[in-house]
Image (cartoon, rainbow, N blue to C red; front, side, top):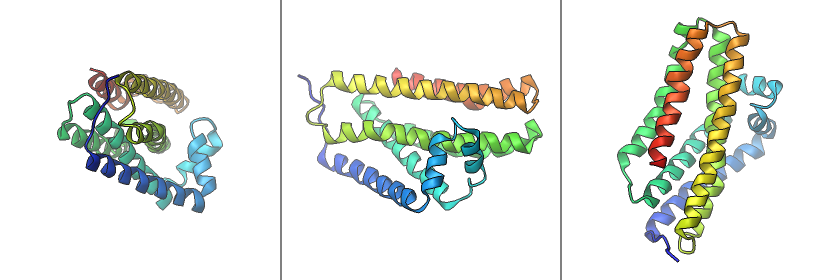
Length: 212
């Protein structure tokens, strides 16, 4: 059996990040359980989505957003390390992409000329980041805890499982965004422009890089 070896200090550092993130999430659950429930069901129920949209500036949402970013970066770090292809530039680029996309959604109001659609896309983006952080959490915990016992084949299985879940999630979200834009009577050209530049292209580039 081929085992993946990592330095103990590295594992401790990653566990600290996950532990802090988990504590912060637990804090959010304790203080705003209804908001957490709405975030979890936001893409399934319009009422829950609307509730989250009205609370995107809430401190709890901000905490969940950035803890999920930390969890996603941890997951990317683990994946690159497993491939023996770790590059700090990729981590910085991933973080910068999230910041730029968040800012670009606000600017996109100039393109769409509709405040309602802007708020919908922004809320969907925030919810997506939080959800992806939650999805990556169990995979990262398993890899870190069992790093001396897990085989390379198991790692490949875990990675494919995570990629499959993320891809399905992004596809469902894409369909929801298209339907939302249609209901807002936005130009089909604007819909394609937005989805290609801010949704489809970034996801394809990131996934293709990680898989390759």
